[in-house]
Image (cartoon, rainbow, N blue to C red; front, top):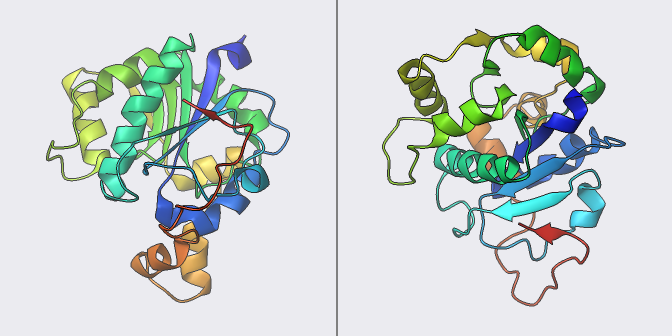
Length: 221
């Protein structure tokens, strides 16, 4: 049964916080396992119970907020998250980001049917659906000090190196099937800003977490 074998991994960045509520709210009523990472060393001060009801477990890169930068932080979470999911016994992974919606999560089972004998269906590293064992193989060599030129360049290089079988699907395909909206991108268009400007806007909860209590009831993996 695919639902028993599939886990969702959501990667996030401190400067995406403004977009989390809408993106994660799209997973409302999702009954299966979602793991979320964050490129930070604490969850303190973030009102998790208000914005993340579908998420089951959390983990951190354990670096200071945003220290790794956008693509290295994402790859670090992909490596950590994939290992956690393997330890839990999952066979398939849907990897997305915390500024992407998934209103039609019910259709994930239809992506499994499209996958058939391929290893992955992907759009960069923003949308990856496929074999968890192959996903972790692609992430084996990753290290934060590795110079790769970008998350997509690294992941694609490993796909080629290990001769993995991949179906490449661009944004409109994911939009149609999963109800995907890039919330940060829409914010950029609506406010006539470039993506750099939206990164500045996105960091809602700043670095002063010292006197705030971590929200109870959320597992720290």
